[in-house]
Image (cartoon, rainbow, N blue to C red):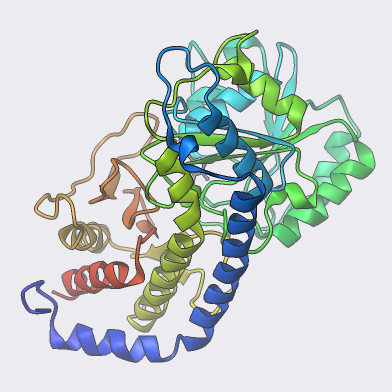
Length: 415
Ligand SMILES: *Cc1c(COP(=O)(O)O)cnc(C)c1O
């Protein structure tokens, strides 16, 4: 059957050998999964989730008890005062955009302390010109770069002692950069430093890809608001779309009034039949994140053994589900992505080739043979086609399927 999938005995044996060395990492991942499953189950019990919450609304979406319960469950899981969990968010970028436009006013300054933010935010902020950017509303943007993959605490302190900053944004996951992702310990430390100088500045976290990777989430270390996508970790592969904004109640209310209408806020928003998927997705999410992590650990080990530069290494503590592989070679990067696609359940017969994508500056190659379009909690592998040709791999609904796709991709670069 491996033969039928085009996987050689050599790759089967390499994989078996690698797996034998990963028992310790897998056990650690399972322990975190235990903990997060407990957290989710407790939130379901506390909020008395019941079949009535699988109901649906249309039109304005008034009095949707399912939606309200989902938001309470998410808030409990994330240790938030309140949460906005909606299918009206088109993507993670949209949720981040709604948050920024909700919290900032003309004349305000926002400050990124993790350097340049995710590619798709460049036009939102106005780093790249766009007539609808924050910049077009006279909202100023500044950034402080990381130093050796950690916060520039001196630079941050100096800046906060200067003219008023309204909002600090921190992106935990690396996006399409080659830096390391930001751990909760690093976050805790920098938030302490920020709060010593400024008690009011809004601390907003782009939490994409980080949920359930460890035991704690950013609100527990003093962040004000966290934002993420439901076609990533918390959707558990079942949420058909959507995003979330969670944290301080007053900020969640502002975000709701920006997403819907001033005066409508959280009270409106039809759920169109997705409530059960969101609840069941969250229920699966700890396990799905664990499967993704195991797939990432396996890739890290296998490709390091093959001589590629990988980040993180298989035995490093992980912050998100993203595994980067530096191919240093355009053809190899593309071949690897094509291999992932070729062993995906959906569209296995399609050949991904680099092309322009809205919101991105470089050509992107993207393997995503997923049940939900663009879902990256399902195994996907992508990256901008520019030196040093780094592929970003993430997701895996089950470890077994993740492993098979990875074997196929390795076969593809060996050929
Ligand atoms: C995925 C991601 C986003 C949002 O991306 P969408 O494709 O718009 O959902 C934002 N920031 C980071 C770090 C991400 O990984």
